[in-house]
Image (cartoon, rainbow over the protein chains, first blue to last red):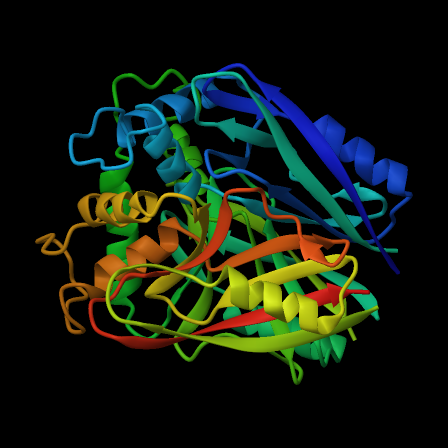
Length: 139
Length: 139
Length: 139
């Protein structure tokens, strides 16, 4: 029984979904894990985590478009505007998605469904260096 | 200290909330767990998990109705339409709710509040066989 | 390797975000934890958990305002109205945010990012006594 951690860095170049399933699978493999629990934790408040379909890239396009419509820039009642028009919408989109996700590991692999991919959902327009902590507890 | 897992299958017959609190409690009981952490993981991208009030069934009705209004079918800017008009809205509703939930276990029971029930939230219209992985780590 | 739990009580006096990062950090410190996983679980269906920016209080003001606009009171199709006009919106806001959050612990501290604070998001108007279970597994 043990706990292992790693820091996954993800460079983003604007709003949208960035898949990093392979990197997470690589971490799980490297731990030599058989059974346990993998937790992902995003260390930011203007980007978030999402498990979504990774078969058709149109899903990611539509996902990003929906959030841009649901939480548009320029809402005139916003008070927190000092960090740019995309900042407060980014915080709200983060609140509406996930900061942490836990995935069981069985037989050395995450129990993801056939179409599930792990994504960082970037909500800021400017390029950012993002950090996601990977944590495994198990044997 | 140990990890135990089980696969919970849930048959759905259309959009809405399907409670399976009792099945999860049965899994916890069967492990003989005293103290630990239970994690639920949904292996799909068009249904999700939710902890909600299980006292008045109207809450589930209204919950489903709200999501149908917030993410309606037929949004004309949607690109991913190949799998039917309810598919992309299902992915979005999944993103807005949960794919994994963790619940502490104390004295052999989940620490759910009085009114909390565990639900699968089905976002597709057609019947589906859904899978939720139950994972317990503890003693 | 061990599991430790505590109950964090939070008194709320109306809708909005209540930070309790310091109390959670105090729990982690008290366990003498070095490496592991901290999970927070909210025992209610009309308030929720959120990790958000704790630098500018305007972020919390805007967050609360957005949710009030996205899920307004008085939607005329609501069936569950017996517990007051703010009750069903509170359930919906809870569904749109988090009931559980997991945060890795490294070197005795949660791996929160620089601007991340832990909040209870109260969705009811009346004062409430809320309960969040803190669970640590690790060494």
